[in-house]
Image 1 (cartoon, rainbow, N blue to C red):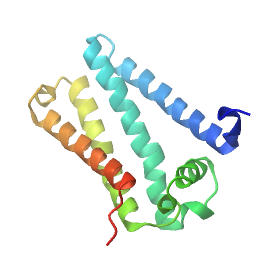
Image 2 (image 1 turned 90 degrees about the vertical axis):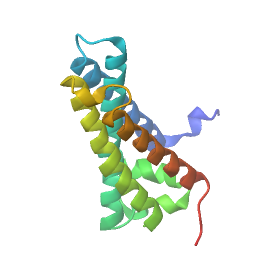
Image 3 (image 1 turned 60 degrees about the vertical axis):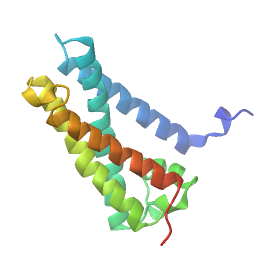
Image 4 (image 1 turned 90 degrees about the horizontal axis):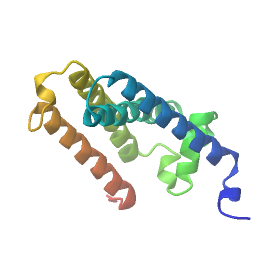
Length: 157
């Protein structure tokens, strides 16, 4: 059987959830961007998807980490993180570094996405190139890149 046949129900559910969030984010972003240029519609679709991921996937991860651990939790979101934990077991139990980075991404990146959505929809001055919004977006992207590097190359103290 091929690689796709070996995924299992949990991985399939995780993929469906992520696809549903992508569809919802794009639909919401395109709806908010009605009457705007292609760049604004694309940015809104991406930012809506980004906010949904932060609040609907990473937020529950932080909650589950503080109320127990992922390995002993049930439900769709827990099964998604259990799949992720197959590659790196730190995601299954309370790892302070992982959880602290996820808190930062939920709070900073999630709310940054909402601020940028608001700026584009309301045509605020800080949405333009080189201004506060783009600087905050750059910091958010740096934060996400730091998280990716930490996950791939953990620093042990």
